[in-house]
Figure 1 (cartoon, rainbow, N blue to C red):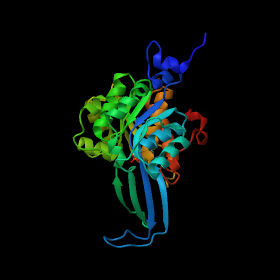
Figure 2: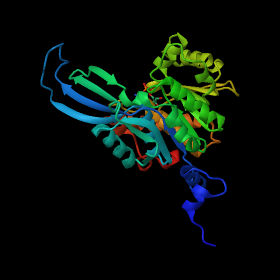
Figure 3: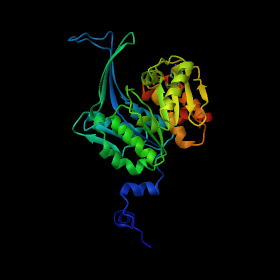
Figure 4: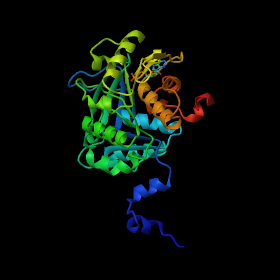
Length: 335
Ligand code: ADP
């Protein structure tokens, strides 16, 4: 019998959308990220300029950043089938970012381009002492909303893991997490940059709530400067309704607390010589998403141990996405 795939898609018995048909016939995404893209415009200069002053710098480069995109790219580099749901401007930086996703193997079906705002950008000046001054303009990131989530819903509902942060509108992040949870898709929420008075629904919509020390401090109102204090903070965050809590602690690795077990685990990081820790947290979360999608029955502390190893490689090279390792760069023991 002759079977016309496209005819069936639009006039067949269930009238599925083209995309829904594709995910019924192809493998679903391992990891979907609903989040931000930022172009980093980095100038290195002997010192930071004063107001009204023009100075000569000695180096300029463009980097790909934004927490959402960073986490998605790290998961893709480990071998996850990934898709990014985000918005960039209809401009050079937007085109360039879409190419970066394609080069990293990230699906771009849900990357929207808008003429109403520029691609998110971070203008960064770094002086010779390593201090910096940064202006971030979120731009098109703030235009990602319900309409785009509805378009991505067929894919989100079939994904294995969904990841969100707070560099887009918080309502959009919360809606995406709820969509995923409603479809039994595992969620990772990274409350970064942290905001005071976070809507309590974020906790309930998070299977894994993963933040760093300073975010944990802001959210709990208590100091998180060591493993002991991180344990206390993770208990406080867990009480607010999430499935598990991970607090990353830089060179000390992370602490993991699961609701079912209530046993606190400190998972140390490998001792390495760090040269640039920018994006270490994003490398950790991208890796965690990969492990949750590929090894759903693996204990969370083992996933955290492996994510520490991946992020530990990223801190040994300069740059954000530029420092994120590929599967081929890592020990076979991690897969
Ligand atoms: P963020 O980048 O959000 O500030 P952290 O500094 O807590 O996050 O780092 C995230 C993870 O990166 C850590 O849990 C650890 O696995 C790894 N990491 C960061 N800094 C180092 C370091 N100096 N040595 C080894 N691993 C590190």
